[in-house]
Length: 106
Image (cartoon, rainbow, N blue to C red):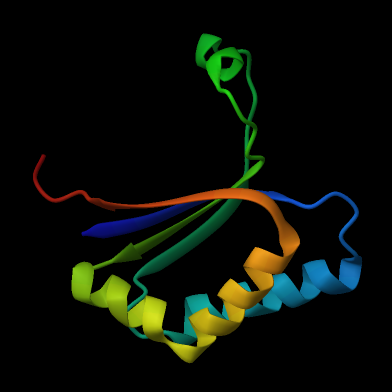
């Protein structure tokens, strides 16, 4: 399994219209791209753990997208629904990190 992990911080003051358009694009990518197995988006939970204070940046949201394999991730990245999501994402985020992980048999 391959995970595409995106941590992100929206620009301050984005409009409700922009937020709604972003979630529409997220839903389109999650449901309309066949290689996506699971698509999770959530808000950061702070609970007082020591590592929370050690983080150099705050990313209040995360998206985790699961694929069967690297080919599935590459299909997702080249799909038109992802192109629209990426366009919105980069225009609405103040900062983001994206990494891909192979989680087979470690």
